[in-house]
Image (cartoon, rainbow, N blue to C red; front, side, top):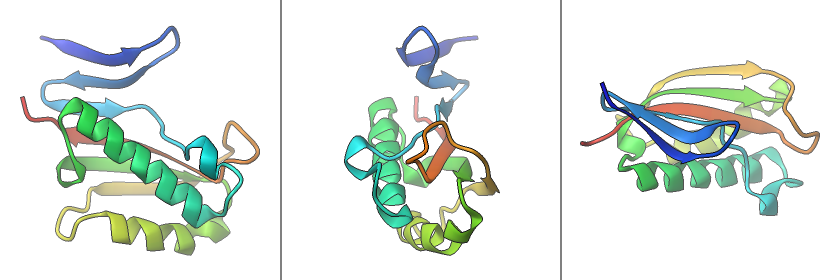
Length: 119
């Protein structure tokens, strides 16, 4: 049984891969979008997901599941506009969306995903 840890720090790894499944750490918007609206934060966050998936040899088409954390439920429709444009048609993962406090006041959205990885 091999477990690969990607970009491991003291507190967490950015991704952990086990038996062909990658578990990504929570992704939030980049610093350039931290004080922007929900759409800008969602776009930035998903760009970061794309980059991390690419680093580990995966892609949007290999998403298995996603959990989205919204600070404010009233942002659900706007976040979904960005999400729907990002997910390739026919490749939607299993998804959960919940309202939850986020670790910084300026953050509006965070996501964790799992994805298949080609060996």
